[in-house]
Length: 334
Image (cartoon, rainbow, N blue to C red; front, side):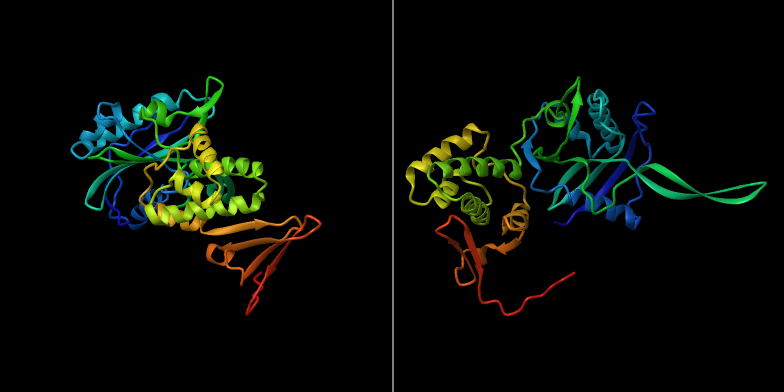
């Protein structure tokens, strides 16, 4: 995806110092490292853990979105003030820097909220006095994560449709840990993330598989393959298709699976991220196997189902033999 940054501003959230320090001047987007840092952070928000949804037009953030382009600085300050009013009530939410960004992608205008927590890092400090120059080792407690790390929390918002993508964390409020960004800041109930939906599918499939005495490793492999295939075909996860691919001709198991995943919180044919196919290929395009003897295997899906290349044999004593076939070369990497 091509992201064209239009405007950006940085606000400081130091829990030790008190209220946020709002910048009155925007970041200089002609500086290459600033553009690169912010662009990478936005791209990193699209993950298997990202939730999706659409804001209600009359919500606080929905109303603020209307002035994001015309009055960007005020929009950024009001957005952060709204967020901080809730965030500072947490007992364990850390200090951070917050970036508010206006950008264009696929001819659509977006606003992004990126929260990057501080980390400790060691550096040098040069001090000169009557004794001479002294090079000291000090701790800087307000270092930001690099551009390759995703923001600790973040929101991207389409300013016209109000569709959003969200990464949020749980923090403690009055002794209870929970999500706050979706429920209190943007007042929205997002669709479960791809990872959350797949976890439900996996747990339910394993449970039902046990009733029909199907090997757990085979069920998990079938689930990963079914998830990968349905996303490749439709860009969504369809419970009916998953059931048919995992439990094949067992209609009873298919029906039980479809009923139970809904009970456990699975959202059928949920709207997905635009990068969902790329994410699915990285996360579910390979089978990762750990054998009881310590051997670990990473097997591409097309290889996993090819008995000319790999075969699983159930032995009479209850053990399983894994045979890897037709290998031309073995490369041992340090």
